[in-house]
Length: 222
Image (cartoon, rainbow, N blue to C red; front, side, top):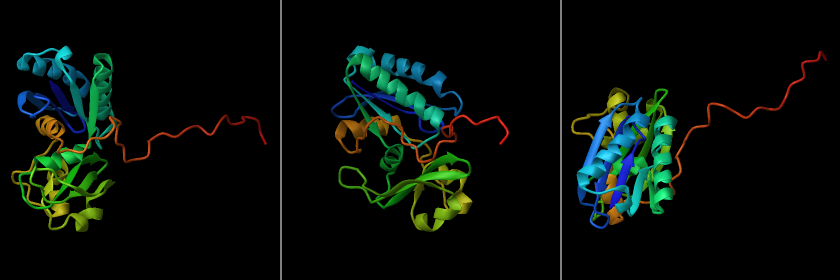
C-alpha cells in the first residue's frame, strides 16, 4: 500500500492508495494551521484502519516537501522519514506546489500561489496538462509579495490559498479554486509517475530567522 500525506499548508491531508493504480482506499483532510503535530498521527492511523491495513502493509510513503511554514512542514517530513526508516520502505518527496497544479482540471497553463505568511506567497508557473494529466513546471518555486509578481501571474488561472488571500492584489476570480494540496492527488501522482519525485527534504525558500553567533565578545573596555 501507498501512504501519502502533506502538511505544508494549513491542511493536514492523508490518503492510502493502491501503489500501482493510485486508486484511493481512504483519505481525510483537516484544516487547522496550529495542530499539525496533534492531527497527523491519528489521521494516518484512521486512514490505515479504514483501508483495512496496518503500517507493515505499506510499501511506499509519499510526502509533500513544501514550500511551506517550517513547523507544519517539519511534522510531515519527520513523520515520513521516521516511518520509512522503521518499516524499511521508500519515501518519495513531491513539491507541494506541483501537487496543487496537478489538482487543476483546467486544460490551460496555470499558476499556483500558496500562503507564505508575512504577507507573501509561494508561487510557481505550469504548462498545460499532458495526456496523462501531468504538468511541467516552467518557473519557480519562489517567494514574493503578491504585488511584486502580479504581472507574472497576470492572465493565468491561479490555484491555492494565496489566490484567496490576495485575490484583489492579483486580480483574481477564486471560484472553484483548490486551496490546499490533496493527499489523494499526491498518491495518484506518485503511483502513476505523473508527479516529479524529489528527496524527502524540506523545501525552504527563505533565509533562517536566526543566524550563527559570531563568537564571544569581550566585556573588557577597550
